[in-house]
Amino acid sequence: MNNQFIGGMTWGWTGVRGTWEGDEAIRSMHEMAKRLHVNWTAITFAAMQAHPQATIISYQDAPTVTDSEVRHAILEAKQLGLNVVLKPVVNCADGTWRAHINFFDHDVPCEPKWSEWFSSYTEFILHYAVIAEETGCEMLCIGCEMVQTDRRESEWRALIAKVRAVYTGIITYNCDKYQEDHVTWWDAVDVISSSGYYPINDWERQLDRIEAVVKRHQKPFFFMEAGCPSRQGSEYLPNDWGLAGDPDESVQQRYLETMFRCCDSRDWVGGFMLWDWPALLYREDQASSNDDYCMFGKSGEEVVGAYYTHKIKNPSQSSVLQD
Image (cartoon, rainbow, N blue to C red; front, side, top):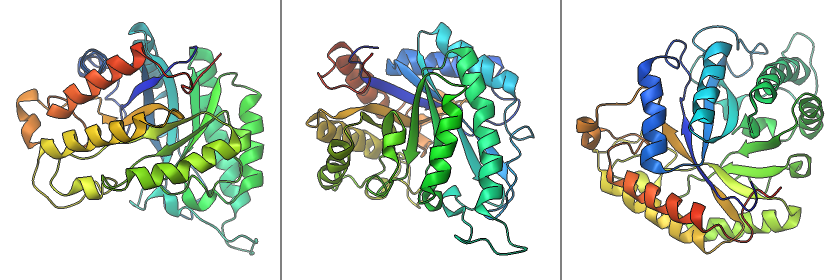
């Protein structure tokens, strides 16, 4: 993986049990590889805790995909010649966004504690770190957009040390948008990554801000998530998956073109793991009425395929991964 640009797509979210091993899932992954010309994929799924102050992560229970399904998806991606990021994510079953998982900074009797939550979260991540090692995943993402947890530096450092004891590949953490300069423990991971859901007219300003972080830490960087729904108005608030608006694939196309163009002038942006490509695709003849992030059958699909083909064949001198 010398000087390799990451031309990637997130696959399989949210990882619903029973959906990853059938013919439709296999077809989905093959279509992703063929149409987008990806060289990486993030095998991504969610495990549940009951609510933001719960301290038990039920990663072996439904609706989370089984270990067999995770291994099957990794193997399928490998057979397609793709590099794999394994990305286990924790979600709240009550619908609260994971960024709001939070506890008192100082322990209080009879209240849930950071130590209890990190104990469960460490068990969760180590379980999949072992699978990532056994299946040869090139990268492991140890967390995603967990904004309130980011300040718990010592706990994250301890978790990373334990992961390194069982996993020998590349470790990254996917911070949330606007949080790149608030994480204090980037030195502990191998690659900095973030969610690039920035308004279409604000990319240059945000890249200036992120560039200072990358230069300060002297770490490779890529966008572990990025994309835009194919929906009117979404180009100005691409992280809002529930924004009201009519389906419009030209919005997604224009957003992707702008994002790629802005990032092309920054040689420290090592690539993208776009959001997202489901295990069960909608029918292609229904693409124009689909207003989600997936670009299957939409005009954005051609934008991504052409861009990735060019970038993978012509990587910059400072692409994200060097061995």
